[in-house]
Image 1: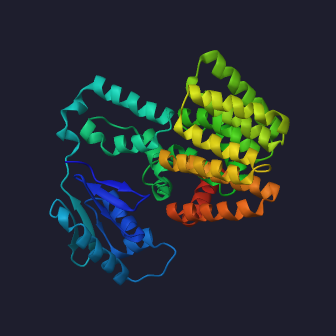
Image 2: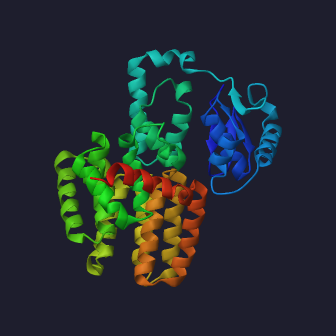
Image 3: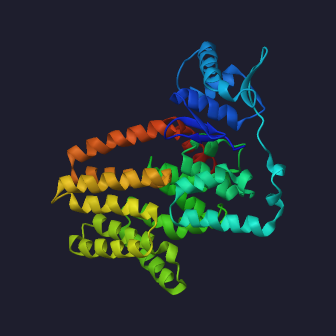
Amino acid sequence: MNRIEFDKGTFSVTWNGQSVALLPKEFELLEFMHRHSGQTLSREQLLHAVWPLQFPTDRTVDDHVYRLRKKLALWDPMIRIETVRSSGYRFAAKVPGHTDNPLHHVPSFTEDMRNIFTAFVRYGRGDALLTLYRNKDVFGFDIDLTYQLLIRFMEGDLRFLVEEDQATFAERAFFLLNIYQHMNPNENRKYVETALRCKILPSVWHNELENYILIYMLMDWGEYDKAKAKLDALSLEIEQNGWDGLIPYAANLKLEYDLRIRNWKQIGADIKQAEERLEQFPYQREQGQFNILKGIAMYGKNPHEALQCIDQGLDILKRSRFLPHLMSGLHTLISFAQAEQWGGILEKYEKEWDRFSRHIGLSEMEGLIRQQLQTHLGSF
């Protein structure tokens, strides 16, 4: 018997080899109830979670639960939504628990599975990563909180990342800072600098932010000299330490840097180098980012081919299931279109951003993210 799997891309839920297609709000309601399995949830709680900026009635919840029950009927009584009289609803599922799999008690097997998990992260295979995570009880291994938060980030589960009872602010801050960078980069700068100066992040995320992500952020802030210095230092470290996993990432950063400073003479060589790196290290996530950057470089001379390249890059990122990188790709694309005054391309991808934003509830979470960053980092 398998775990219940939720696919936000298709608004479908799968269990025991069978899939059911849901409407967006049905999907969001079921996912929220599943996340709080066994808890009695009032209609008010459900309205606040699923319709936070709207003004529906209790009847809205009842109607959606009614439709969900009809669609989930084939799984009853193993999976069902129960009515708790005078209180609300409760999601109930009889699925195998942690102790059902003896492999949980074999340390070497757990370590091997974690290595596979890490390899999927390196190769940008978010699709495989999510499948592995959703079936971790079947495979027999645990995921620590660091990777659990990463999974939520990949899935675009912003509500989980802002809920303060799920993890401490320090544990969630890396993800909140990354999200807010694409919403308000200039305001985010003070929060990023404070987080790094005060060293509030777990070491793994502090290192990731300071040595890798910050290069992109510095370019976003127009600090190109600082970005170049950190990029050169990173490239040297990669060469000295043999960090193969970062080679295509650094090549993409070099291409983006030269695009941002309009160093057109160097861009052709950057593209060639990035292509060579991706042939050597075929990481799906970096391939998608590269296609977007290559399309931007081509747009002035060959708009039609450039758009094909960009769309291919976005499709790759969607298939990779790394939503943060899709967010970064769209953000970079729109920033260039605004700077170069590419009206047609700007309108096309602003609509894409709006669809993406609605899909993960970005605008609904912006105020909560800003409030938490200000509360924890704004007073230093």
